[in-house]
Length: 345
Length: 277
Image: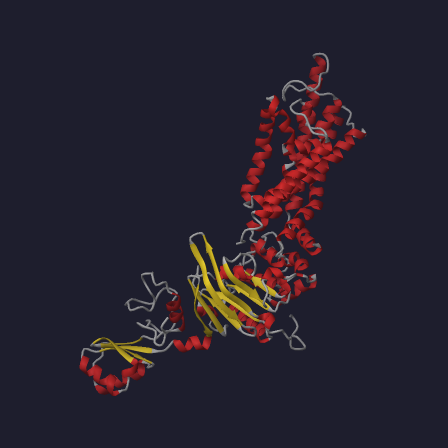
């Protein structure tokens, strides 16, 4: 992989399909995964998203034969992971970025697994070069930064040159440069026809990397589509309020905003699919006094938070409450909308 | 299995644990060899001055041994006092995987868990041999050196003594297998080391003294793991001082191997059957 492949790699499509059907797993009273079903297609980077504790890692562990499901099946290329001999030549997986003996050097860490995975020692230096760790090959991993650990974990998954990659939070701890590098690298692997599944608890972290999304919350599937389809659910909107209620209502009717606007009170409305400048200019032209003019649309991240919000939790982001955006919430788009237009989950 | 074995061999060879264990064992045994040889010879001389040599009577402190008993007692110190070293080496080969979460990549590379555990048992042997040789060498070096300095015969030319020294290496290697089994049952590294230390340094010696007090339980003490290890070597301080009887050498080996097998099986059907992570 350090040298560009001369001929395009050809992978069998069926061998690359990750399939989870009716998967359930509980730990004592905690239902970690409930009747989860989804498919991951080869040739695309798929984001496996959900808040912490949603069941992502548990699902990956069941896919990798590390945990036994209570019900359902989890297969890769139509077979359970543990049924393969030398599975790491077909599937590369990284679950924790800290699965290293601190006293081992980076190269030795890879050399340890090379015989079992079924590759030679030369491959260890290749993957170290691929992830940019050649310089640190002879350093003990105990002194590695989080970003270096992530790179070494990725190098470990690449040892067997696998067709399928399952990466748990691979961007965690990477600097912006590292994230950009990872993005390009994963897309490059997917473009070769490989299956790339990347879990994350933040949509924004993988937004520019993934083409498909599988979103789970509390162990259940809440959304599955392409990222473009998900993005289509996020629409701009403007919150407007005026002391002149009848004037506001007249303006909304006159501008044809009616079908896509709704009134919270007689003096305030949310106008969907419009931006603040356009609405503000029309109001100014009509001489309508405004007390409020603010973006109220749903950003992709707000939509994600809304999809994965716990209905039992008090502060639902994007719910019909006042108050600012949640911590770690949208970086653009300002306050969130009272409702998500077009989404009825 | 060959691939799994190569992986497990590399796991041990790429960390410092094995040679640090050997080094510490070596140093500790030199010191113990010197101390024990010196005090046993002094005990013998005092007894000679007060008339007559007796052997195998009295408590630990008042034991008076002849030259042969002194030599074998000193040369088997690595087994009697130092078997914790190979046991910890073996235990760490399993507990280290859980402590550093490397059990995940290990089982991803080889999902057949029996193969992983089997490879660990085999892979620890060559390193256990190095550790055992270091400990026994330390004992012999410290013990024989002291005997020489005090003008006593080392008896290293005696074939019975040589056999005892060689068999103590075997006993220590078996201890490493017991360690692997123990580590697979108790995967918490700190707990495993603490329990191993407590059992080998305190619980078993105490049990042996207590069990020896009653006729009913006396024979049981021979089957304690430490006693089984000493039985392989065929001698020990405990025996020379009249504190315990030992099994024949081969029965000792089978007993210790039995502990290893039982522990590994328990580990296989508990730790290595459960979900990982």
